[in-house]
Length: 340
Image (tube, rainbow, N blue to C red; front, top):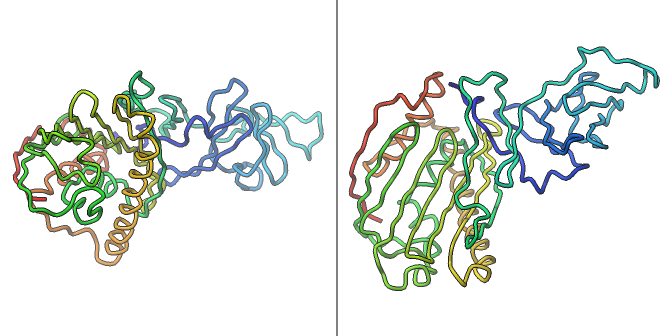
């Protein structure tokens, strides 16, 4: 198994208009994304075969892509179908074909898989309750100057929230909590216990009666985190992030905040967007600082029991780096007490 076997988001479906070409980076590979004649997404290596210009600044016309340097035209398979300097009657050689990657469209996202022959046929992650009746989804995109693994760990790390997002999302109160952390089948699941409050300034709206919160965090290999809060029939929230590895130190994160607040759904939308973006901006800043420090001093971490989540996630990533299947790792479950 390798990271290239998995599907990664490269665009929102609505971003990929018929005459648009998008430049993307994925696992260090440069891609150009556009729609072919059949309207389906196309992903080619962002390199013209002629003189090595990038194709992404080129023009898309009727499902074909014209290089901006000498006008070579590529179809949706990557085949060169026109070479202007050779004349209108030219017949380009069949070997002139740009590298093409497999694409898929699902849940309003465009996905790309880099592996031509993956170790097994995997499918993109299904976004919770996307476009289901009674649910709303707010979608935000942010770039982090850090690795996928550090981003994913941040998104399911509770202790940092009291210090990076004070007031907005938790405050340091030394509240005693328990969690059960389980690694199984290439994923990590965290169930929190005895959590009733400390959700920030909107906590009273989300949990007016102070009942115990059903809070579950999940990590799915190799790059998806899903945070779930259930506080009753019409108080249900999912925060799902797909961390896209552009390069070793640049991660583009697509985040869905999907919620069910009953009659408050449409009114809550601008508030949900603002709150999500403020929290993410604070995470972008702290993860940028972490990346600078790692670059200078390395990745030697001093873990506590509350960091068991990170240890399990890192073990999954390490298995993929070794070419192994993380689903074969031993199942482990640990109960931990910590304070926030």
